[in-house]
Length: 277
Image (cartoon, rainbow, N blue to C red; front, side, top):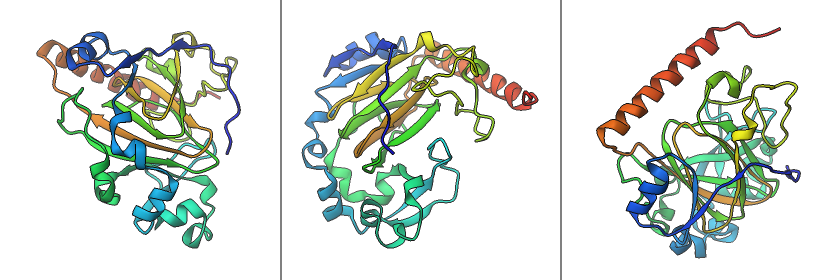
């Protein structure tokens, strides 16, 4: 599905070239603001090696799960996956030919479990510590992909390897003004689409607070925890994400826990509230 062009008006996400840890923490980790890091992922072997032909040769026979998407093309990761080889997914052959895989997405795939051959082609970024970090793999086919507006409860470093991805980001705020999706039934997914904003249906959405960027090959986007983000690729794309729960000094840890409690309370209120007619 080719994504239509957008006319973004959000704030620009800054770029920072290969900062040291102290600079990254001072400018972005501590204040919790997004940034695109350059000169980091572009040094990995993956940046030079990974393309569709390389994946076919190296991991094309590996069995992987692909997940169904809802009608808005959001990968429903708690849905029932289809298992097939990576080559079949890429080529639309075998099991892919017997399934409507246009409505499936190879999303958030554990590299260690499913694609261990790729482990040596990247390194763990040192900006958020190692902790419980784990790398996951995203692969969009020619038609592109969407991951609808949602937030994570971890810090994320999102590295783009092949193709580019366009991203809208919104800071945490009033939970209900971000319109948790009534149909998907997941409290961290929004019904709002910043690429096609409908201010009549969603009048309270804080569009004015949004940041917009395009992550190019070799770049890495830092997404702070609890920041809403909508990601789309218009064509073939390979990405790697790292999810972290970094260690903080006590005041920052307390702030995280307090924010988690606020969100949990607001989620319970929203889920318990009757759906508007």
